[in-house]
Image 1 (cartoon, helix red, strand yellow):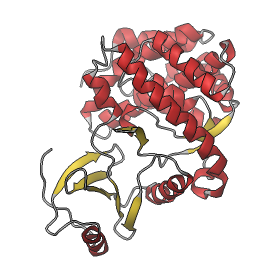
Image 2 (cartoon, rainbow, N blue to C red):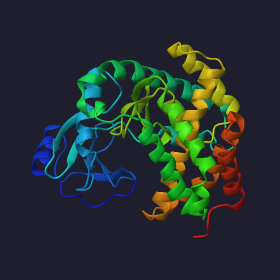
Image 3 (cartoon, rainbow, N blue to C red):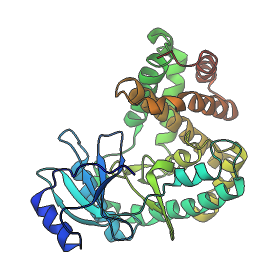
Image 4 (spheres, rainbow, N blue to C red):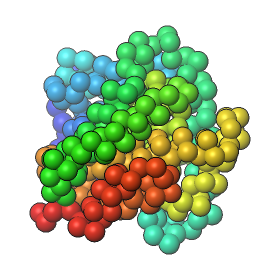
Length: 343
């Protein structure tokens, strides 16, 4: 990890860090960053380090992060402890969960690619167990946290996702004409998809439940970057996990992991449950494609561009298996054949 100059830390948080056992001048390294613009600094060295989250004035989810973190931690879920914050400068000191992402474990195991499928399933079984706990405990505790109930993943939000995909990915990154994307048949399919996903049983939804938002410790996976949590489809988080373009899990392994989830939650494990999961996965993959297009094309973060083609392939194979959406399938095939526009 590259050592960087110490950021300007709030005086109150400097005092807190001293109370936590650190000595000034603090040893500081960059622990990570997010597409939102937040930067995470590690103060000290593991296992006695802490994380300083430095946000920015335009971060609309800063307050939500604090409220949701404290609420979920008190409910007993695996999120980092908040030690203190200075809201005037949008800085927070939180527990350091380490440096091993689920994604880094999977890279070591050979994913994406011809990796160790047994290790993948073992790790994902542990993650699914934590997801089941999140949905059970979190849903029962949700009503006592206004920051979790002020947003609902409803039809409007679902249609925003597919519109985001159409504009930022299909149009901007692939050059598909706006009039083609406005085709009534395609729009009717996307509207019907949103209605089906909106009708799913609602639980506390993590919203961006993928391999870069799960830290791995000796006792298994922990949650990070969950300020977008809200009430929504019980299948969306599982779809985000199993249809993750960063990992590209084979379909057969997805199905086996779906069965584990169904058994743990006692939801029906037949064709209806699988179709509902597929519908959620189509929504999620289109959201991810919109994000990759936006982050690479608008935010100037080219690292995300490499996931456009894998995610389009995942979209095409999933809509083929799901069936019943010929216009979306034709669009996905067209995008797969053409590839993204040159940079």
